[in-house]
Image (tube, rainbow, N blue to C red; front, side, top):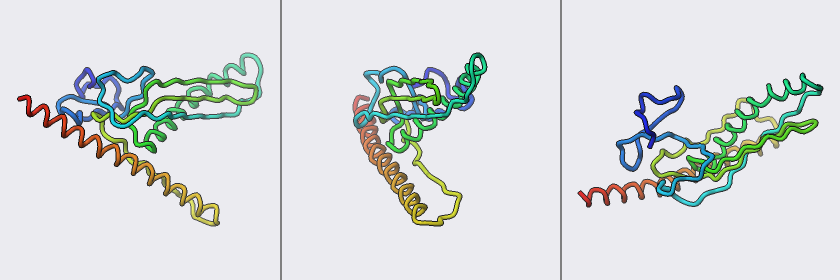
Length: 184
């Protein structure tokens, strides 16, 4: 649960939803954390290693202009890295990533950014949205047909992972509610 009311969240784009276990407190849709998951956090399934990578060419420059070019590229690398991590969580049907480690390597010709984490499914949080891949260009050849088929397969894997974990989480939440009702 978050320690504040959902209407006074510290970030404007932070979306909070009611906890799926107790229904009284508020939880985020997704957690990205550098720490390990708390011991009492309700988890479903096992953790899955997830890794996102972003590569960008490094402009040819020297001295101060080189440092400026690298520092200007870093925010975009980090944004793209977080975006890829979120997409991979959707494909895996997970709603949290713990033990997040990020690394940036600056080489002579490339800047490479890598993030690794353990993706898990927390039953108190909502299941991730199903991944939808949209295509705006026409299918022209066999390669395009193969890409459309691959997109469809990725969407199906994402939907089945999400559904499997959401069903298990729902069964667990009902069990917790019944146990709480029996105590009363």
